[in-house]
Image (cartoon, rainbow, N blue to C red; front, side, top):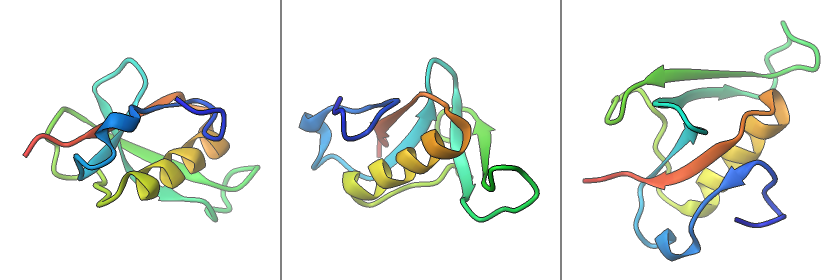
Length: 89
């Protein structure tokens, strides 16, 4: 975990083991959509989740850097603790 990514847990050793998903900490819920500009909330932004490991609606990211950027958005919008996890293929 890095202080550059508050609220986000990840393992640097997994960096080359993509693709990656973002799991809401301690749950079986995974991020399925991020809209940082959704203006029906204040401050703006919306995060949607789906339940279940292997749910095909969960967002998948090719690189850890992309997943970390998205997890940072989740933290900024909702304040959810998340973990970036390698998807088992």
